[in-house]
Amino acid sequence: MPWSVAPMRLGRSWPMAPHAPSLRARWDRLVGTDGAARERLFGPSRARTQQSSVAALPGQPTSTGRFARESGRCPAPVRVLYAPFDEQWLLPDHRLIDAARPELWRVADDRQLFAVEQGCVPEAGGPALLATALLPVGGSASGTKAGAGRAPAGRPSRIRPLHRRPGGLEPNLAPGLLPFLSGRYGQEVTPQDVLAWVLAAARSTPEGCAVPLPEDGELWSRGVGLGRRMLTLQLRGAHGGERPRMPGGRRPYVRAAIPAHPAELLYDREEEVLQLGEGRVSPVPAGAWDFHVSGVRVLGAWFERRTVLGEPGTLDAVRPASWPQEWTSELLELITVLGLLYELRPQQEELADCPQITRTELLRAGVLPVPAGARRPASVLDHHEEGPEGQFVLL
Image (cartoon, rainbow, N blue to C red; front, side, top):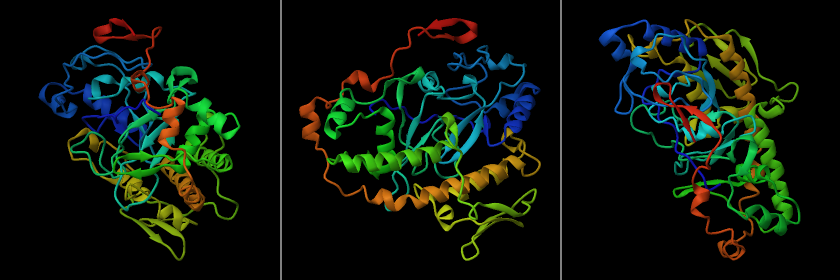
């Protein structure tokens, strides 16, 4: 997947939150404030101030006038993948984001999938790559907000769209790879097959995400089937797929109501109980609790992002007055996804040691080296986008 994009850099954390109504409340507070107080709440950076003149994000009908003059309604928040397995909400306003990666927004639609490389932490284990149908922000596995301060260890390195154009057109694969693999394995190989194999077989290395290509067609088919199961779980019903469900008798339920302000997250391994303050959820498989990405416990980081209090007087401090019911539903589904993915790890290990197609074979077939043009975004010649101060540009 030669074309890749760096993670977004927000520059300020308040335009993103796990609770959409909080974003609207933050916007209303900001635009209802004047002078130095408004400037302080905005959080200017070298890339963005209230006087910055920028184009709209592709596909987003937000204003392109300078934010200093903004007094209108809050734009509709969009669902994004902030960090591993953590879906949040983002204000899709280019004036608020230091580096929004418009090339990603340009190809994001109901046919697109994104592969998100995870940062390598030596001996940490966990998946090397995750997939999503949502626009990925590229936040770290830890609780640090994207673009807020120095990038922590384990921050995703690159985001790779499956398609280079909207509508599922032009796969983001090395030219000639699909015909080569189809001939080698004696079956049609699709872009989705390649993504499925990558999900199942990828390994993190200090040099990046390493993906072996097996010589054996039977092993390829087995890995693709495993990867498709992993993809279905990670997409959580997107693109018409099934929402993940534990087998009967193993589905997690709320046994004691989660309090308005749960202070800590604990796990009882013997009883398979997840405790959120006085709240209790069970059964929670140990695999869900033990699931780490880049050395960070996924459930712990997810909980931290929803309970950390913003600094008083800032927009980050505008948050729900109590634990929303929607977070409980998201938590139950997250436990399900992590538990089911953890069960598939032994099958992934079976793909690790296998005779591989060599670089020499790929060079001989003309798959390598990848042309420089395949590493750049495709041109979108018929897509109108609003430029700064309401002008239009043709890309």
